[in-house]
Length: 255
Ligand SMILES: CC(=O)[C@@H](O)[C@H](O)COP(=O)(O)O
Image (cartoon, rainbow, N blue to C red):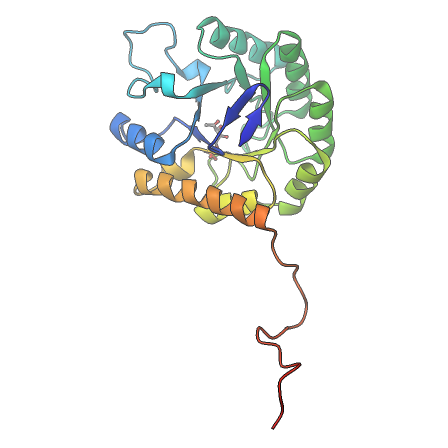
C-alpha cells in the first residue's frame, strides 16, 4: 500500500497524461496500467472551461486521484500561483512541485523547489516535490514536512533510466517519507530497478506515451513495478565475488 499523507493507494505507478498519440490510446493505457494517480500540467489543461477539449477528457477522473503539477513555473511564487489555481478548480489538494532550473536538462531548481514547498505546506497542500537525486535536499524537504519526495532517475523525457542508483539508495535509506522515482524511466527494467532499490513508487510518462504500443507498455510497467516491489520485499541475495555451487557437494556419500 502506498501512503501519501492521508491518502492510500494499491498501485505504486503514477502516470503522466501528456504526449499520447490520441485520447483513446491514452484512455486504454491509463486503464490497463491500473494506476490510481494521474499527473497533469495545470498550465496545459483547460480545467475551468469544461466545454473545451483537455488532456483528461476521455478519462473518468472520478476514478483517479489527480496530481496537478506546476510545470512551466520558474519561481516559487509562480508555482504557488499555479497550485492555488489547481486547488480552486476543486480537483485535488495534492500538488507536484515542478520548478525547472535549466531548460536544456529540465533539472529542477533546488532553491525554488524548497521555497515553494515551504509556502505550499503552509497553505495546507499535500506537497510532492520533483527534485534532483540529492540526499541532502531530500532530507531538507522531509524536514519541511513534504508528504513525499520525487527524485529524478534521469532528465525528463530522456528515457535514460536510473543514472545514479547509489544516490537513490541513499535517499531511500535516509528519509522516511515515500520516495517516488520520477522522470527518465525508459523501460520496464528501469522501473523494476527503482522498486528493487526500495522506492515506494514510480512516476512516468514518456516511456508509455511514446512507446510503439503504449497500451502494452502500460501493462509492462504495471507488472515491472509489482515485480520490483515483490523482489524488494523478498530481499535479494547479497552479491559475492566468487561462485558458490547451487548443489553443494559437502556431505555427499563417497564411493
Ligand atoms: C508528466 C510529468 O510529470 C513529467 O514531468 C514527469 O517527470 C515524467 O517524466 P518522463 O516523461 O521522463 O517519464
